Image 1 (cartoon, rainbow, N blue to C red):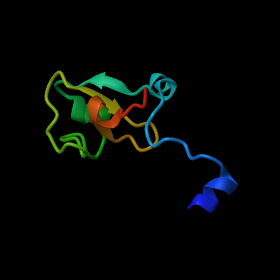
Image 2 (tube, rainbow, N blue to C red; image 1 turned 30 degrees about the vertical axis):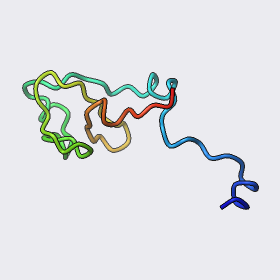
Image 3 (spheres, rainbow, N blue to C red; image 1 turned 60 degrees about the vertical axis):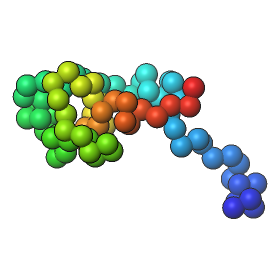
Length: 79
């Protein structure tokens, strides 16, 4: 791995930078009809913490796959 790192350079940290989160979008407050509105396959519970979404939870929908997660579960930050 050291050789690979010396050839390729340092790897990006496995967490999001502040700029990444600010440009990501997809944030909404879960409420009545959110599961139908956002149409994600996992719209009943967060697949990170496995808790059901409840009205008022702040969530983020990922752009590429449309999955929904609690904002605090998916937004691991390094700053």
